Length: 440
Ligand code: 9WN
Image 1 (tube, helix red, strand yellow):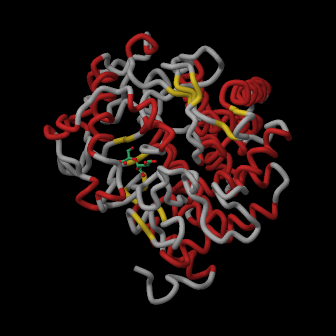
Image 2 (cartoon, protein in one colour):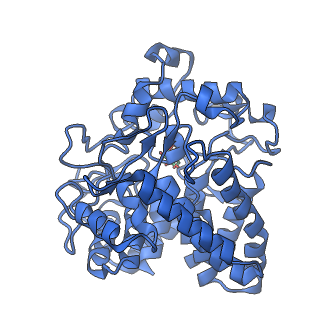
């Protein structure tokens, strides 16, 4: 389905396309990831989107983050979905009636999910402030600071189930990479059969090709895991004894470490003490290397807390701790070497875009969501890491490849990892937002 010509050939045209995409997805006080597939507010999408808004309409960056954090729970968790009450029932599955957040202690007035997503919000707030140092921006940052701190506290306490200074995820949706092959082994232990899904109607496959989405069995397990967490009203005590899915994810923990780095900078602006944030950032980096780095693969891997073992799959998740500037140089060098291998194909002149999974693996699927396709948020995170670790040549290659994807196919949700053809939603928020950031 190659288009007749590029969607936009020059930076000004690309910028205009990205701004039009964000404007089209703006909804009163937040931006939807996609009008069709994801019509509510998503947590890490809002963070990436705020980074884009900061370049063109800075006031919206602050409104985006403020509206998300208004839905923060009393325990500090930032829900992965904040539901828009004005949408019709069935606009998204699973919707507010499925989550029943009102039954949980400390849930906000708004209907939300009970899960989290990677905490990239402090980084987003810091990047937005770097572009907009107005008095209004400083005030918005000061209002966000205690909420960002509470978000980190939730992760570092309620979610440190393994006791090793890392947070665990209780659902693949919390990773943001829902059906990554990284979750196949831990998901195989979740009891569910595809018949569970007969009680529900998936909504995603109305708008996207089912072959490009998670399977019905995946969804049956997603629903079963939520049902287990919901039955205990999303409380985190005794997770180790009763919850079917508990994994330490390299991306989520890298984001948590990066958030402490950003909070140290934010603290200095809002008159708080940066010291504790720096200490926590160092402790998280150290814990990531100790618990999730495998010197035999040169990559980071998720740790399944139910078996105690690292998950062997080599996915793009394993590259993400490169975003931590204090990663030891030897570890960073081995991650970069893996990124440059045939598995991920990173190069100063990239022939193909960064895949979400090891291209050489037998379970690599070029069309299916997080099992192979290329995503701009992963490329953007890796791009930051390459710059932090002194590889501007590779960062430049990745940047060109990101721009090339949108120039060829538009602001799609994800892209075919060989051809660059657009997949999923055609007007996707974070693709537009992160493109604006790399074009700046
Ligand atoms: C479930 C909104 C979200 C992203 C996730 C992506 C996808 C939801 C879904 O869409 O997840 O949370 O319905 O598939 O996997 O990363 O935040 O864009």
